[in-house]
Length: 82
Image (cartoon, one colour):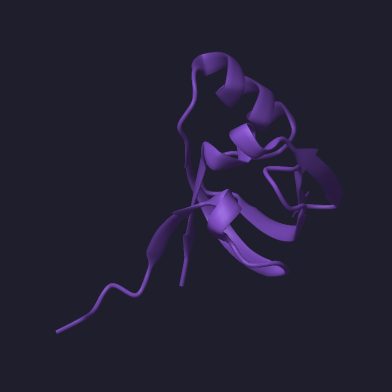
């Protein structure tokens, strides 16, 4: 029997300096297009660098880029960790 060890979370729930794979962007077409233009797309890898308290921005590394995403946007990025 093989157990599925993957966990689905939003980007906000990811711990600092932890890598994950993007599963989906649960927003409208506009948000999905904007995220993809920044290099965040389903199947891509993302690393959370920091998260400011009280619903502040979330900083992430995507490829060679470091991005700051608003709390609401980060909540719509569904990721998968092992």
